[in-house]
Image 1 (cartoon, helix red, strand yellow):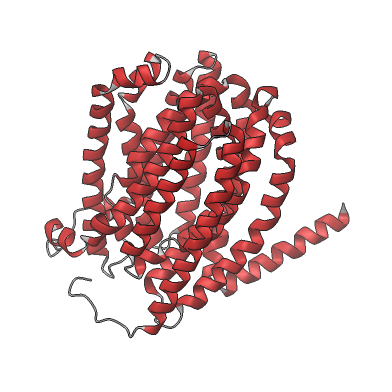
Image 2 (tube, rainbow, N blue to C red; image 1 turned 120 degrees about the horizontal axis):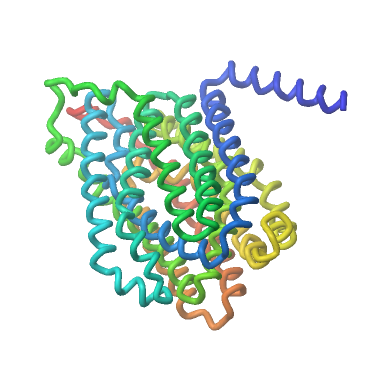
Length: 440
């Protein structure tokens, strides 16, 4: 025990030295700490949550989450991430306002769409009237999550990584806490999952609004108009927006195709996906936030070095956890979450190659935006969407072997994305610096 305390003490001192020496390492460690706490809390709560809810109920909730996530990804028309680009905070605040207005419209249209097509959803998913009723208020989830993300980009721009990390912990903890409490009150059911989720998202929204009082004040009179900035940054919704839309179609399509086979199978798949996101979120999420800020200001000639630095460290950080999960997942899931979740362990094993490559590609995915190669990324995104959906639709195999093949196929495609990102970095380093824009 004394030796373990000594090892921990030396490791802690080393991390502190690295944090004090490098602002990049400091930011990554701050976000990683918040992400780690969030993931640990989520994992612990999931042990109890998945003993309250059935795989069928989690499958219905997965459909709700799939539809809302699809809209959330494009709700701000990418003007949220555009806040990172201008030098002026005033310009960034106007872009944030544009994003908020887009989110409000998207949220309203989401609920309207679900009201209009409620009968179709009932027929598609085994006459689930309860699901179609909850989808009618799905716009609320879209607004809360999309606006939280919008403000998170502002915090990233201001390098307030401590506030970002603490809000992340609060929101994640609140969601699983309320899911557990509502599940106990309602004895499971879709009502517990959705109301618990919305309550947790509301806590995260209120908290992040309190942390950013500067966004509540009036924008200076000399600020550029929203229309002029929408024209200036039109490439974001026109070129980068379709990339995100295609990614959302892929994620939605995969979940809905699995759910069309069996809603319970989607519940098993959703649990596997959620738990496998723990190492993905811990390693890739923290690095991505900091890497995006560095990409936005990196000088010509230094981007390829930054990409190499990030990839090597992400690869070595992820190999151990994912190798362990691949071996242990079929035994670990039913042991931790209960015997009914036996298939989730095999789904997790199937997803391992894909999600390992996701760890490598997530930090550098924004390189296409920064280097203005959105068109190149769009072509890849279309293929990355079409290939898995065609495979799921036409696969002659049963569901589990189909998902195993899907995991390998998606890992190979992300390898292609790494090569494309490296090409963007090399091309960027070879170009001379461009002249400053008139709007900064």
